[in-house]
Image 1 (tube, rainbow, N blue to C red):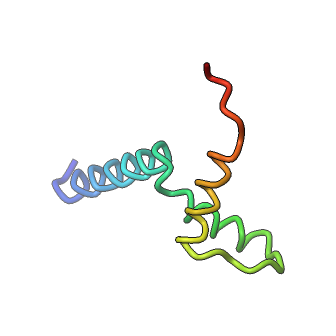
Image 2 (spheres, rainbow, N blue to C red; image 1 turned 60 degrees about the horizontal axis):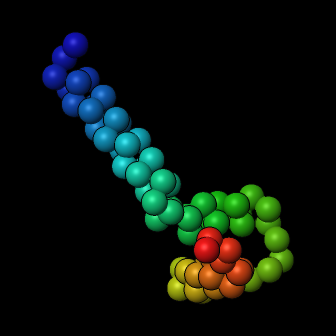
Amino acid sequence: MQTGQAAKLVRRWVRQFWRGVREWCGDAAYERYLRSKARLDSSEQTLTAEEFYVEQVNRRFSRPNRCC
């Protein structure tokens, strides 16, 4: 394997790893929302990143928490 091919393989692996980390921690949620919105082609207005974040926080903390 040549050095250029090895470097390309490492870059690809790092990119995939980073994408996985962003998905796992929820950092890529807005990008996923935009892709879904484009695919569905709905007539609703697309939320900005700030509006999306507020919506997510409201959704997460508006439900009763029955942990205790």
